[in-house]
Structure formats: structure tokens, C-alpha cells
Image (cartoon, rainbow, N blue to C red; front, top):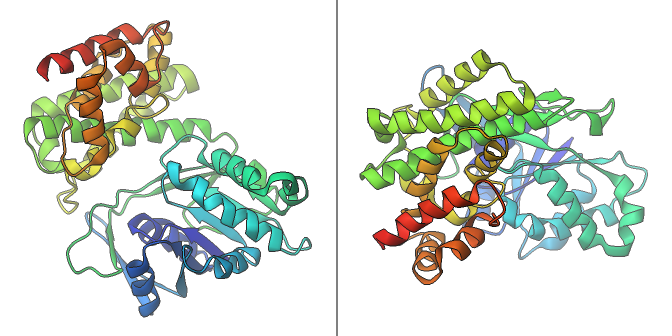
Length: 382
């Protein structure tokens, strides 16, 4: 069996690639970073170091890497004979991945079993987005090619921090992970991925993860940056900030219970687990790394505005989420282009237009006025 994975970074090697290796797949990484591709091809194995309680070292073998920018033909040939294709590139990069998959399907023998495609991204229904991009790239031939692949949405969760100096292609991760995958698209032939679990309805898993792990992580980053903290663990050791993060997550949990009927006690345990993970002293994750790309994280269907908008539509409390949004608007990192773009937008744009441009909310939405006041507050600071 063979799996092609787009994105040979830390998540690709330390999470998705590791589980595919444990499932018996030959691994082909695809990336555009030439030094990383060369480093992977120069190694016969790499180690995934799990740090924290219960962590162990795991060795990955049987892999190679292709530079998709310089050798697309080789990548297409690998996809044409692969069993599985996965991604961990970021939702905005999927449109660049799609043409390679479309070309691989075109080169694939029609008699082969369907290619199993899963986008492992921090976004709701990212695989649906990828499928649409593949269809667009295929154009008129999509009618003939679509039966050569099945596309399944996933929800993935594992903290992979910035790596220590000199780590090479080894990766440091936390012991905890979760990979939930839609069952129905695969019929009776799901991929072999140890530790993954297949579910009939993925929506509760995606939103539980995005609105708890991603919301909590980003909230801690922005609130911590405002307070002058350096790491997420330091931030959550500050009782006042920890209380603000908990307040935001209690609001997202209330939404998840109302929307998906997830049990209150189960979500309370899940929140506690998440906060313990964030405080893992062996994961020196920085507020700068977690907080980067604030414009994406403040967009309409992301970790703050997404749940806050749905909660506001139901008349539920959103004060904790709005406090996190306020901290995100103050995130001013000179090394992060999106941070600088956000600050310039706030300086140059009137508050109402800024709300719509940043969050996608219109004046008719019940959350608009509350976010407008948060934007006003930041603009008064500036």
C-alpha cells in the first residue's frame, strides 16, 4: 500500500505520516521546500518524540519525498498508483494541491480501486473544499475522473510545537492525538489507519475540536500576547487569563450542546483535557506561533466568529468569545504579515467596514453590533 501526503512539515511527519506508516503504508511526502525535501531523502528513518506523560519515541521508515514545484511529473505518477492521499498544508493551499491530484487521477488506471483522499486541515469540511478544487482543476474531464477517487472529511487533533534547534527531520509532539474520519464515503473498504476512528456523522467531532482546541489555543495566544507572556503554558499559569480562556470555551461548549446534543459532562471533561494539554511543560509552544495569521483566525467560519455567530443567533452568551476577539485585534507581531495587515486595516478603515472585512459579518447579523464595539475599542487604542 502507498500513501502520498502533501505537506512534509512537522504535522505531516509527526502525526499524519506517523499513523500512515503504522498502518503499513509506503510514504511519499510532497512539499515545495527544497531543503526539507532533500533532508527527508537523505534520511533512512526519523523519530517522533512524544513528550509529556505517557510519551514514547516512535521510528518512521519507508518514506521518500518529492519536490512538487520542480518534479510534478514524478508526483503525478505516485498519485496515479497510490491508495491514499492526505494533506496537511493549510486550507488556503489546497487549491495548489488540487491540480496535482486531478492529474494523478487522469493518469490512474480506471480499473484500480478508488483513491482515498482526506484533507487533514484545521477547517470544517476541508476535504469537500479540496474535492471542489480538484473538480475545477479537472474541468470537463471531471465527469470521467470523479469515480476514480473518494473524498472523506476528517477532524484531526495533535499539538506539534515549533521544533528544537538541530532536530533535523525528527519531530517532537504531544502524546495525545485524535483523527476522526467520515465512514460512509469508503463503504466497506476504509483505509487502514491505526488509532483513527470512523464515524457516521463527523460534524460534531469537527466542531468540538475546532471550537475547543483551536478556539482555546488561539484565545490563550492572543490573551497571553496582550499580557506579555511568551509561551502558552506560561499564559495558562496566569489565573486571570486561564479564567478568560475557560469562559470562552464554556460558551463554545454550550453551543455544541445546543447544536449537537453533546453531553454537558462530556464536554466539561474534554475542556479539562484540552487545558491540561496546553499546559504541558514539555511543549514550549509560543504565543507568537499559535497566534500567527490572525485575519484567518478571525474570519467568518473560523474559531472565534464561527461559534460566536451561531451562539448569537440562538440568543446565547458570547462575552468570553468577544474578549478573545478583542485580544486578537491587538495582536501586533512585526514578523507576521497578517498581523501587520490587520493593524493597518484597523487604522485605515472605518469600524463598520472593518468588521465586515475582518469577520464577514453584515450589519444585519445579531453579532455585528457587539463586534463593532470591540473594533471601536481597538481603534481608540490606535
